[in-house]
Amino acid sequence: MSDFNFNLSPDDTMRREDFFVERLKLLMVMCRAFIKGYPVEGYRREAVLKNAEHVFFETADWGGQYLNVREKALYINGVKPDSYFYQRVKLLALMAKSFAQGNPAGYFRVKAVEDTINEIESTLKLDNNEDVLEMHFFNVA
Image (cartoon, rainbow, N blue to C red; front, side, top):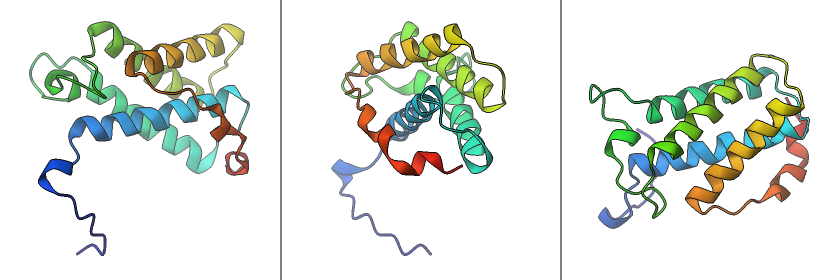
């Protein structure tokens, strides 16, 4: 049994959408770190790949065969996402997977990652906080 006791009341239970948003935010931070030139090796590489896989899975259109966030969520962060939003999120997951696998990323690919992150942040009304990228732990791979 786990020692963690979150003491969540019925009103504070985390929904699948909450986990999705947190994974998406983490993926965006990972992508911004990549854009800034931080290394993507070892554990960080595996974390990017695994996180991208989860985010992609939750936004893929499974034709009703599997009820993921895309099929189930009415609102995420108070916003009703549309098809365009889910396409952007899937694109970000694919681009993150690509750079984590070591594929070349020139100016236009990096710009596409940045633009995609900005679109997602705008849709979900998230603050663009790049100060987190100045933390020294991003240098560890």
